[in-house]
Image 1: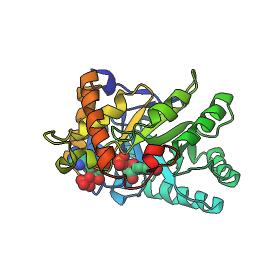
Image 2 (image 1 turned 90 degrees about the vertical axis):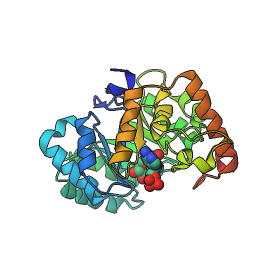
Image 3 (image 1 turned 135 degrees about the horizontal axis):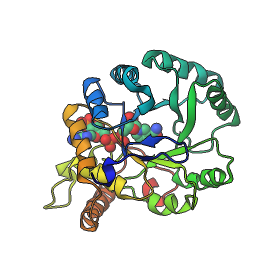
Image 4 (image 1 turned 120 degrees about the vertical axis):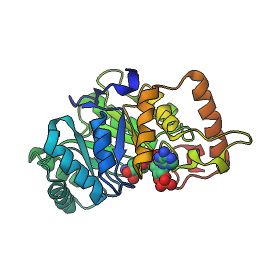
Length: 282
Ligand SMILES: NC(=O)c1ccc[n+]([C@@H]2O[C@H](COP(=O)([O-])OP(=O)(O)OC[C@H]3O[C@@H](n4cnc5c(N)ncnc54)[C@H](OP(=O)(O)O)[C@@H]3O)[C@@H](O)[C@H]2O)c1
């Protein structure tokens, strides 16, 4: 077994997590999610779109072995009073007693205290075990990490964009992680909305990478705990799983991915800009 096939500690939560996580946004059939979990995946993220099939997969899997799963539900709520009902609906639909994480989605500035308080209440009630935050303002993470190091952050895991095209996190996020006792890091948009897989977007004479290499790229960075994939069908799921079989990229493969990433960056705008990185915000 190589590095990527092994589960790792998820920050300081005490949970052990697979390096590949599955996002629900494109999933229309629960069978291939359940099959991936049988192959060792245990991180399931119900967001940004809570597809019913993904909820059914969570339900079926939790019935068999809830303790082995790390289940995340996302809330984009900006209204504290709506956060609890949103999580309760999700608990009922997935028929689980708790989620391991409540992810507060897309906070480019620190969330209002009333929202953090609402999330903390759900923790106290045992409906969620830990909190996570995702952002499109990568430099804002430095402040979150300082709070984490001081023991005052409500969040145990942070989620951000990192791929072969958008590598800003290498300078504006990862160097600011605390030196010991780190939070977990989840990377999203590994394929850059599929652009990295598109033959028409490649430099002249170059073939696109496989999806597995996009996930391997993110996972080769030592500070990334989990790379998310967004499979739409069984074939895409199987392809993503091959990332774990193939292991980290070599330095030569990384250089190849970066060259493709630079080309895509220069020629094709992101679907939506990321705050904080001048190149990304262009
Ligand atoms: N909270 C946040 O801030 C945030 C931010 C970003 C993403 N997310 C969520 O994170 C999850 C993962 O999304 P992602 O964008 O990071 O995943 P991803 O795997 O990088 O991208 C998913 C897209 O890549 C394509 N794809 C995946 N595997 C493929 C394959 N083997 N061959 C060809 N195309 C393939 C699919 O395109 P086709 O549909 O064209 O097949 C799919 O639309 C989703 O649930 C997403 O909604 C959340």
